[in-house]
Image (cartoon, rainbow, N blue to C red; front, side):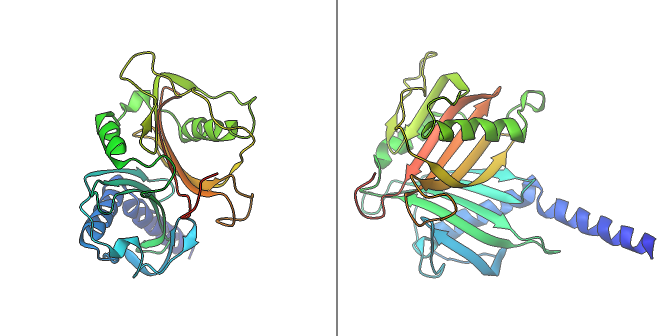
Length: 270
């Protein structure tokens, strides 16, 4: 009996590992891109009981953003093989309906894992500093390439760098591992000029808690995306504050790129 249990556990572990390989997760983000392009809110790896949110609110996936066909002009995805999760950044430059979209997906722990949770932050005209032309231009100039294995930071280091940046908004004593150069893309506003001296340490608001954080980390690319409530209340997801995504590229323990999206809920931002 003991040998049988060990064998079953080994098989399940192998299945989970295969389901959460980089290749399998990439296939899922490719499906997401195809679904968004076609406006078809379904794909083969999607669970029938998927929990789906847009801008921190539950939405019917059949009538949400995924049901709108879009020509995606820029797509980049990251893959978290430890959490069985993914992150995708889509930029849609269509002047009639422009979008910048940040989506996290999570797989369940079944024997044949499926996407059980999708959380999207999207921004469009009227959202914080929204300028899709600037966003597209600067995002396509950056180099988010594979980091050599011997130069990769650990998950803990990558997350700590992103958390330090977010913590700074509510605690000015926090030491942020600023890199030089570092460039921040916020809406369409960009702090970089392509110079070795480019800096992300150009100031942030004070007394603003960035809370209810959920992470997707990809050590191979040095990235962490954090979906959260900007200026929200701890433990009250989506109840207050701005729906927000901050994605970071970390190189050698230092911040290299920062991409931010903040949705204003159809009203004035904070």
